[in-house]
Image (cartoon, rainbow, N blue to C red; front, side, top):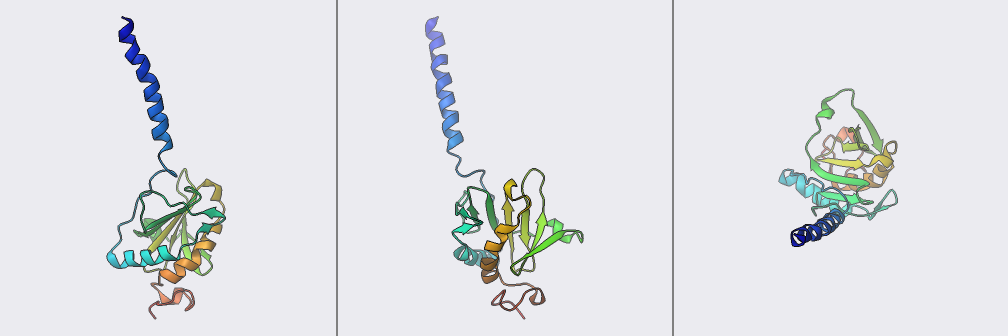
Length: 171
């Protein structure tokens, strides 16, 4: 009968080790859904990817998985950018809140259980920036992202953006 207990005894440490290894191998956090924009918007997002800085709000670049030119991250998930996202329903709400960060307009959402989420407005494609809880009352990361967004994503409404804000914007 001792032999019948031995495999179970050996199995338990193996299961614990397997759980520990898989728990540690998940990368910088939960995978980030990659948007699937139309081709013209995807091209704008690839241009944005080339403009993005190495640091945002003092956080080093640490892109999420899966690897994509449509997503970027800083600070192991503290700041996550997705380009080419669908238009949020909240944009139709006349009571939605917005802010301007260095000439780029953003709509603010406060999802339950996480930090703020900002989506660019008046641009040829939507750029979403999600911040973790440490940025609950801080839109500072948008300041570092405003210039790259302005350079890469043209204005959809010329009267909402200055000429220097969006080169190539339709007049």
